[in-house]
Structures are given as C-alpha cells and as structure tokens.
Length: 348
Image (cartoon, rainbow, N blue to C red):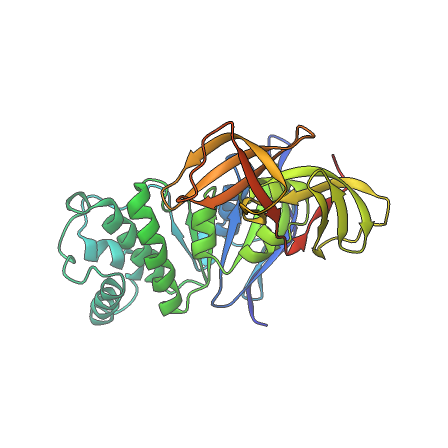
C-alpha cells in the first residue's frame, strides 16, 4: 500500500519534557486520518511536527517515501508539500477570496492559476464569491476558503488543526460532511486533529486516540467503540460503564446483571476478575423482563431517553430507551442484556 505518511517512534519535547512519546502511525494515499484526544494530549504537536513547525527529538517522519525529519535530516516546512488549515483559518483580510486561494500558486502561469482557483472554488461551493473579501463571508464560507487555499498547491498531505472549533454546532455538523466530500473528491490525503468524537467519526477513515502524549489505539471508529484496546480508550470513546465481573468461560462473565455472554475482544482466563464494559445500547428496555432496576437519573434527548440505573450491588449502568417509554425517576425499569462484543479489562 502507498503510504503518504509514515511516522516511526516519534518523540517531541519542549524544555526537555516529552509531549509526544514513541508514536508510530501510517496514512495511506487518499485516506483521511484523525488524531483524537483531549486538550494537551499532544495531537496538535504531532501535526506541527509533520508540517515542520517543530523538530522531533527522536524518531522519523517520512512523506511519500522522503525522510523529512530524523537524526541529521530536517526538511523545512516550505519544502514538505504539506497544506495546513489552521483553527482560525488565517485568511489574508486584504486579499479577495480568489487571491487567498491563489496565494501559494505564484510560480505558475497566470492562466493556470486562474483555472485552478476557479476549479477549487467550484469544488468548495464558492464559485460566485471569488471577488469577495473574508470579512464578507460566514464562518463556514471562510473555512471552505481556507480548505481551498490549502488544497491549491496539491500537497502530499493536508493537515487540519481543529478546523471546526470556531463554528456553531449546527453548522459544524453539516460542514464536516461537506469537507470530507471535498477532500475525497480531490483525492487528497488528510490528517485531522480534534477533541470532538462526532467530528472524528464523521470525517476520518481511521482514528488514533491520544492521551498524555501517547497513541493508545489506531483503528476505525467501529474498532475504537466496540473493540477498545485499553480502558482509557473505552472511557474516552462514547458512553459506557464498567461492572465488576468474573470470567466463567470463553466469552462469558458473571456480573450483578447475571451471566453475560458475547464475542470476547481480549483473551481472559477462567476465574479472572476484572471489569466488563457495558454500553447504553447493551441494556435493552423490556417490560416483560423479571430483572428490574431502579431509575436514579434520566436525560431526555428527544428521540430517546438516557436512563441511569442502579443495581442491587450499588453499581450503575446506562440504558438508551426510545422516548415514548417514559418512566420517572424512582421507578423500576425492566431490562435485559443484549451484547455483541464482550470487553473485559483486568485493571480496576
């Protein structure tokens, strides 16, 4: 497979303190990757190091087979063929939309520049705004101008640093899908960093979860949600709770909810004790069930209600129930467990 980006054992440090440690990942041509994690986890530092704005202390970064950062080698940012979309878009206020997009194309003939600018503005849905100025545009339009400008020089890789964080929630949700479609239509390879799971799931083909400078898991959204590699990933991705359990067989544990069976994600020995991950959709509302739990909290969400249920053991689980099954706090809710993947962690 043709990997545009290859990072091996990357370490980046500020003031001798590492902010990224032993990070390795690859990104195939034409794919969209995402580094996902909370503020301060090192994800933007990785992006800046790929772009050449920071230097690696250890490890190696290669772009399309060319070593751009390792011991003794450092290719400056302007020669790495990366495109960057910044959090604040960084548009030039004194230049029109067309001239902003054309900014990195000054070495080409004027006719070619005009054609490429018009083509890109059509792709991002701004073909009629070439002569407008940034202050005349909405936030979403400015974001698309920034994207077109970054794509104009046909970079080896497009880097996006929290590109939707300045937009309101409704616009952000619609624009995420638009931006993904634009990137895919151009055949570009892209790496996004965000703290927003919804953005990561909607945009990326593969996602890496970061914590304290380390890459905990790299995989699809489906992998991260249903087959988390460690408890930190399970806690960060989606909602869920953990129940004490004892392994009683292959793909079988005993809990306060009774015996739960599922396809085992991690190997565990019979007799092992640990914690089993229970997602809200694993707890199904069933009025005919003999197993009833107490509703101790509820969050109405329109199409569904998220119930917090307290078991006799004192442990809590969440249950996502269609909102026409409306039960007040303090009453009992009949439930059954329907679980596909059995995720058991040894750590408590």
